[in-house]
Image (tube, rainbow, N blue to C red; front, side, top):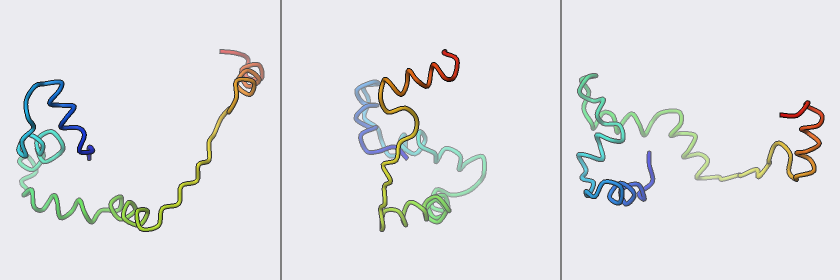
Length: 87
């Protein structure tokens, strides 16, 4: 879901304050009507899915790796271009 800075951006772009109902329509609860499920059920299931479980586990024990891939300097990039045959 979007961070809480999104309403500020939407207000700036569109000039209207974002209500809870509009927030729900924009960020996913608009699918409750065609699938005939309640918003409460959506919120219940959203907190218990596999991705939510992974996020929760990572928040409890964060371990960023800071590993980067690809060329790290201009020289490495130019060498890569030369080896791969250019653009």
